[in-house]
Image: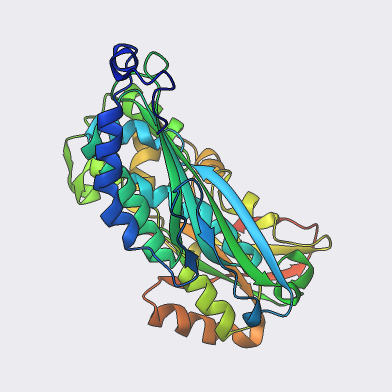
Length: 354
């Protein structure tokens, strides 16, 4: 956080910016950030930039991959529940799980938090979640910025975004060009809606008059807590899977749903036929559909419906892929196959009942 350029802290405080709170927030977050350190990090005494040494001896043709994202309106639920320690995990997942789709190993992340008023403990909670996500992904949190925006945001309002960088060998980049007829589509289970569709979630909560703090037996917990379940971080699992079997492509299932996102990983002339009967959507999806009167078509076009990541693998490696994921405690199953077609993924059949 930048200091007052006039050198008059009192004037800046009168404008709504608390420099001391910003400095305390930095002190509180240091222990969280330290958890994510990787040996390739280089110390920058000034603190203006994060430095990271790329191990060029490890790669013949290193290609850097980058991704940036936020968590959307899920932060509004975090504010309503006054629960700020998991939203950072969502941020990391949205960034690093995009990186691994190319086959890249996530190396490091930076974050940006904008808030109406810096409350050091709250900022430290948010950054603690970001650090936890980076720890799960195996990447370093090498820098960030916290900006206080009085007047532009309410005192308890905040938003966050992040950017990540990874590396992949030039001849190992994954994507549609590797997909072949007969490949098997492997689903990896989600932890819930992840960080997508929360404008619809909030609309359902408001229009149906739902109490976020109410215990919902069919969901096994408090509604708001269930809706804040952090996004599953697949990065390490995807890296491990790519090392173990012949993966041709991944698809991170985010906004737009399963079919639309998987279609992006298919080449022209091939299609993926997915079988709904291979899994039962998590109870939270049935609950939202019922309370909001949302059609299956709209649910599938908005939410992941219980599938957060998809791998397209060689048919001969399908069983091995499932074993690798089971060993890593990632719920996974055969979702469908790749066939001749128009480059689209389609769903057929009826969902299994939970």
